[in-house]
Amino acid sequence: MNTVTTAEQTRDECGRDFRWPRKVEVFGVRYTPTTYDDAARTIIDAAKRGIRGTVSCHAVHALVTFSGDPRLRAIANEFDMVTPDGQPVRWALNLLHGTRLADRVYGPELMRRVCAQASANDVPVYLYGGSPDVRKDLPERLNEMFPGLRVVGSESPPYRPLTSAENEQVVNRINTSGAGIVFIGLGCPKQDTFAFANRRHIRGVQICVGAAFDFHAGAKSMAPAWMQRAGLEWSYRLFREPRRLWRRYLMTNSVFVTKLGWTLLRWPTVMRQRRSWRAALDVTTVAVDGKP
Picture 1: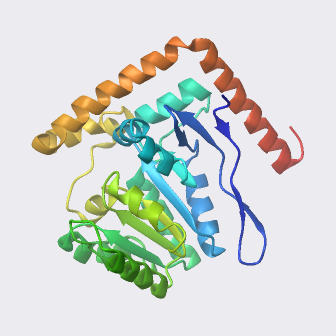
Picture 2: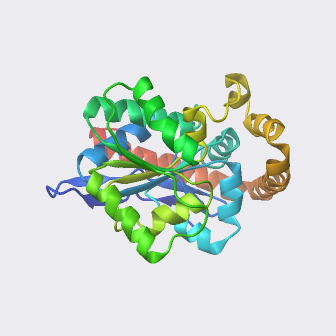
């Protein structure tokens, strides 16, 4: 099976073509091998052109959760962009597909960069998720970091499934606000299922950014940069919240290592995947540049 998917093409309100980046599979989940700059530029371009989109940032926990559940896997594979949020996921993409990514695309950092570009391009943003305290502090923090950023709405939903009427009201509030970008911070997989369920209704690009709301609001601290680069952020978060996270990391990290090991045992298949990705990249380069 070819694990390189073609770029998704749609049209903006003026009928002009727009393409989301192509994707590759890791354990059956389709990821977008991208960079911070390319991801942020694509999101802002879509928002400015009135194109709906769904974006999520998946680290090891999300990869293992979604790859092991057919329903969730089908949801993730309908997203327009799924970025390698964790360093181990980036390593897997480079190893299995030869994508040569120099860095991951981490949800909190992607949110920061998208906010910077949204401020520069006058694209309004909406914040959906987080605790009531985070909801109160986050808009002010973002405005301090990005003067001119238009936060046109924020809300902290209840810790239970929304009724159909409540969900419709949320969609109406978001659309009425005029937001071009909707950041969603509900945790995995709740944020992904919300974005998927509303992908045809919310006008704008939905971006699932996990714990980014807590970090940017100052409610939680991020791991030191050296731990993030080394792929050890999970150990920092485990140290900070052992009772909540020990089971998650024990199980998901073990499953990830096991799945990657089994995949590598099929080395000829891995090499075909790498050649397929490089060939697809070459085709894209010819199409864009007009030359190899």
